[in-house]
Length: 294
Ligand code: GRG
Image (tube, rainbow, N blue to C red; front, side):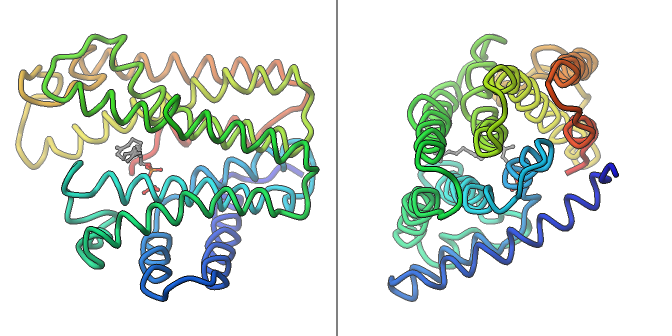
């Protein structure tokens, strides 16, 4: 029987949201630190990255037990990146997901340390997972370092900061989003495939699927930012800007950005058709990313 995406999203979100606090609770660490870590983990979010890990196990008909720890780990890394991104030395945001940001509640120093704690513990979660083979855990850790570190999300964040005052080219924008956004989403897909012991040819194809899905996710994010703000400030869509951040719509126009989004989704779906398994769930994931409204 084919599962509907919505049922999958709801049920797997529940699994992740139960597992993460249990893990933090067990840590032998100062209460304030654990509270700060829990606060941001429990602050909501779509849980797209952990759900993708489990979606790959489901696709390859493997027990999802193999992916729970890795799924929690990637959400913990995502959460750390949001805590640090909100700090006064970065984006200086007061609200995240409608709630006060971590540093607003716990102070700047504790927010830095809560992020550090989440980042470090995520590796422990993967390494101490009793279910996957040691070889697969090592592969997953190596993929995570590439996706989240200097060659991935952290590098993308630096390029983003350095590009803030400039009008970026499409190539520069692409570099930022491939690293800052697409690689961690891609990790979820690749780690799920590794843990599911997918054929190597499929894993390489899924890297390309992940790339297209990740860039599509960011283009949709840029579109949502403008469509969300339009009502508020009445700014014409696609108008370019000297002092504002470069986005896909600001370079390509809104129409061009929507076409590029559809191109990436089409490429992603074509790749899925060439896998050794049929994946109704991963096709539905493409449509979710293309049409999401938050
Ligand atoms: C501080 C090392 C470091 C990195 C920060 C993730 C990030 C990099 C910055 C956050 C700002 C941002 C808009 C990043 C692009 C990726 C993105 C759209 C993140 C939001 O992900 P969602 O939509 O968030 O999955 P939820 O709230 O649903 O978890």
